[in-house]
Length: 244
Image 1 (cartoon, one colour):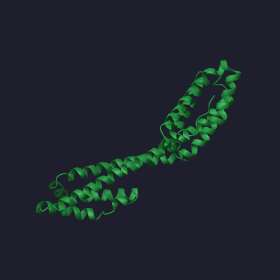
Image 2 (cartoon, helix red, strand yellow):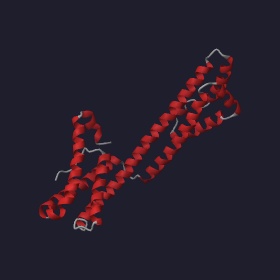
Image 3 (cartoon, one colour):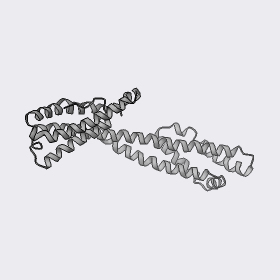
Image 4 (cartoon, helix red, strand yellow):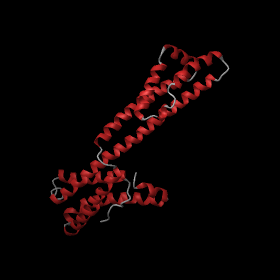
């Protein structure tokens, strides 16, 4: 019985371990001899522990990535807003210039906002939106085509960031270790303990363990094939796959 390729991605290792645990739990529910194997149960419990921790860590990493994306989105809208208002301020049309100058004075107060920390930027954006909701600012916004849409987009982007930030905080509150650091002990549980034991049981009690082992082996083979296909595509994939 082959072991798991150690350069498997953390997400794939998490998915594979989850399936292995699920296959064993099905044996327990069926009250089979495999499900009643106390030694095997202890090994699966260890796999389950690392698998659950890895899943939590992956979710936290994903939440962090989503936070970066949400921040980039609001930063881009702020840049577009500044560029649009500045453009209007440079037009030789007094009515547009006056409205743009008023808004530009407000935006200037928040210069450098996109380089602030996430929390600080959120606070400043909410303050900016409050300033832009003042009567004179609203009149100026309505006089400039497209500016109202950008302000609305910024409001939506900030609300989205707040939601993503809440999800990030919830995910990281449960995270104890990084996903990459958890992959090694998880693979050790499977490759150095579970696989050798199942290989032995397949030799001495194939009638009892054969079907379960076949299912586990198929999942490991499928995961290893995925790694092999990715490596064949080029060195770039091989260099990054173990940490994704």
